[in-house]
Amino acid sequence: MANLRSIETPALLLDRARMDRNILRMQSQVDALGCRLRPHVKTSKSWPVVQAQRTAGAASITVSTLKEAEQFFAHGERDILYAVALAPNKIAHALELRARGCDLTVIVDSVASATAIAVACAAAGASLPTLIEVDSDGHRSGVRPGDPVLLEIGHALHAAGSLAGVMTHAGGSYDLDTPEALRAMATQERDAVLACAAALRAAGLPCERVSVGSTPTALSATGLDGVTEVRAGVYVFFDLVMAGIGVCGQQDIALSVLTSVIGHQPAKGWIIVDAGWMAMSRDRGTAKQTVDHGYGAVCAVDGEPEPALWMGAANQEHGIVSMRDGSCPDDLVQRYPIGTLLRVQPNHACATAAQYDAYRVVEGDAIIDTWPRFSGW
Image 1 (cartoon, rainbow, N blue to C red):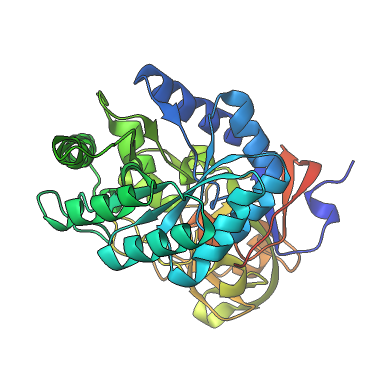
Image 2: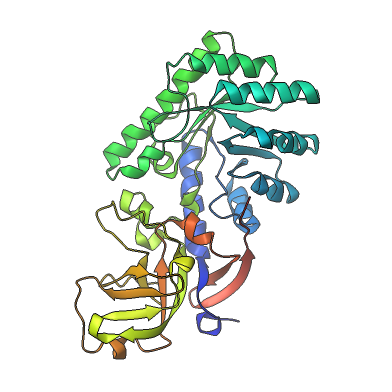
């Protein structure tokens, strides 16, 4: 059986036991709240990971690209939500997927997009179930509760037989770091989308589905009456941003990058490794948190964090690891000789995973499997 010392670096490692615990934790939380879990599979883009989530009880999936919809539909997934506002140039592809038997739902947040869907559906003699995206926190996209445009969009979609409900994503939860603030955001997320659902129904429009979700709010919610489904993604692996928010610990992070020491600059206190920003991604999501982990948290080869070290700089193929306190130990080269293996936990699991075409699935020091993943659009 292969082990960590038998493979080339950098390599993307997936701790199977941690992943399984993370999956069970989220599934248990959503089950207890009486909702369906629709995990966002953009994090993994890997069929074996999705299988593990489905086996644990996930009812369906969320995707961020039509390529993901194609890939997972080919594996037998039918109930798929494409949770990025649908561009007009993708409507034909979405309708074609539905014509092949994929139960695809899309989202919009403008009258123009809703009208484009209605026109295309009329021309095709088909319908395209669509959720209206609600802006529950001012973070990104969506219609604000109380905005009259909600009903304009609703009427345009309903005329085409395509109005399926409402959805929101409280991405603002990523800026929080206390249980109280996270619970309040989860309540705000729920109340915003329920208000929009009520407005549609009061106008005589259907609103069958009410969808919420982000990993922090899903794990912090205490009541979801009226919500039909929860979407969350990064929980499957977790990452340093999630640890900084407080919804997991470093011991829960299932992903890491295996890297080798390839050089030193003793006078600068530098350990050079072969995992640069191409291996870790440029995501510096922890920079605005209490603890800035640079390009990732450095760990020993067994996964035990080494908090005295950090990857504070990176070039394309070179990572620069140094002492967090800026010191230059005399024995740096002896402590981390050429060939030493280290593991680096990611700031943002989705971004780091996107740099690789496979996960090396590990149990302890053993590599027990290799799971393919895909990227692109």
